[in-house]
Amino acid sequence: MFRVGVLASGTGTNLQAILDTVHGCDGIEVVGVASNRAKAQALDRARRAGVDAASFLSADYADRPERDRAVASWLADRKTDLVVLAGYMELVSHGFLATFPMRVINVHPALLPSFPGLHAVEQQLQYGVKVGGVTVHFVDEGVDTGPIILQQAVEIPAGRDLDETLERLHEVEHRLLPTAIRSIAAGSVSIDSTNPRLVRVEKE
Ligand code: GRF
Image 1 (tube, rainbow, N blue to C red):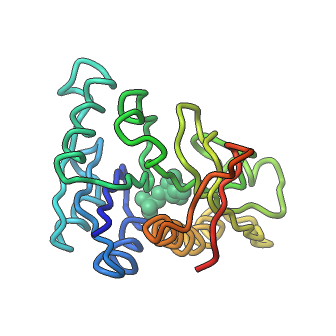
Image 2 (cartoon, rainbow, N blue to C red):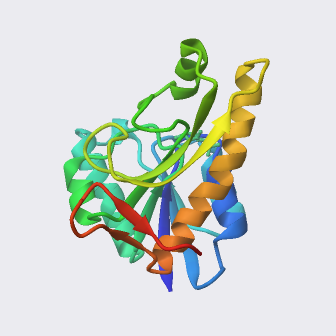
């Protein structure tokens, strides 16, 4: 079995896509969902799917590394093979990444390396881009700087409305993130032997 842990801070539509299209398929199981927010809707989605859910609030820990150690050990207890950041609005600390080396991925609503960080969609609209997109990448210690696994371009709707743009991007995220998880679980994702930035993905 390939065991997936998910970290989410918000509404959790990406988590829902994972639960609907990956969980319980091809030997992949979501074994736990953790959040930095007690009221994250993602936690309800997990519980509804019968998946363990827990919140780790920064107020309960001395600092972020200590909180991340607690999250990492909760995921390690569930023998997590891959950690998916699905709208997790915090950086993960060095110790967390050391526990799961090259086993943490993130979905970002822009074509990295353009528009990293928070508010990427608003910034793309403000900048006037005509084509945005979605990136799924491995997480390193920088802000959205890890090696890119999958990317897909998304045309910005003519009206340039924020909600409509978010909806288009979400549709793509909900396909691209499950595809990346399936590919990693299938052993189809590797790092190029001569370029550690280049992620090779065999076609499904
Ligand atoms: C997504 O747009 C993702 O790219 C970003 O956070 C958002 C999370 O949305 N990192 P949801 O909670 O999955 O609906």
